Amino acid sequence: MSFSSEIKEELSRQIPGARHCQLAEIAAILGFCGRVTEEGDTPFGLRMHTENLAVARKYFTLLKKTFNIRLDVSARQNKSLKGGHSFEVVSYGDISAAKHVLIQNLCCKRAYIRGAFLASGSVSDPEKGYHFEIACNSLEKAEQLCNMIGSFDIEAKVTRRKKNQIVYIKEGAQIVDALNVMEAHVALMNFENIRILKDMRNSVNRQVNCETANLNKTVSAAVKQIEDIQYIKATIGFDQLPEGLTEIAVLRLEQPEATLKELGQMLSPSVGKSGVNHRLRKLSLIAEELREHKEERLL
Image (cartoon, rainbow, N blue to C red):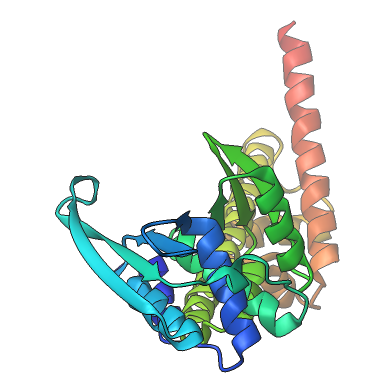
């Protein structure tokens, strides 16, 4: 089961207690995946399509509880779903109250967003990336939904994809907030657990990469120091060097893997990292001068 299906399975078990919230959720369902029908003596019937059986059950229960009308549920094979089915819920009764409902209370906004997500929403697998979206069939509807989500301090945006307007959220923490608004608390915890583990892995990887880069830098510096010291030794020897430089030169050749701090502690008296670094830089300058003099003689 996909992560989106898990969320919808959870949300399908929630039936709002207040009638105004029930009407708000039905209004979203009507607006995002339903169409009005006028069949026979039915003044205001409704057909709603979904590819999720749990969502179809939710539609049936919600309409039955809110309006106490006759309903039919039918299933048909959907070839585009590779052997899956699509479901249709048909109501026979006046549900016009849901068409003209005003969404003002926060509880009703939660219900409306939940209904919109059940009808045409999805969330990507958080292991692969963070993406929440609800497809709308008009820009007006998308902007209305975007503003409604924004009333919970969640930054949703709108983009066009083929014939639809997509309301989407890309930031992980904001998706968590959206799940909380819809009251998908189990999915929220699963999403957060995955997000925390991913953040920890990324943090560890960054630390390892940083330490590896520092180690490579240290090794490269040590190799260059040893090359310079060996060049000085082969060219003029250590006898012409000051005692402090001779001491660190010999020690570096004996301890090629030691850090600057470790080299300083081996000296007598001990010297700090900056002091060791200063002496090694002097040796490098001497080696460079010797190389330049050699090139001048060759010219």
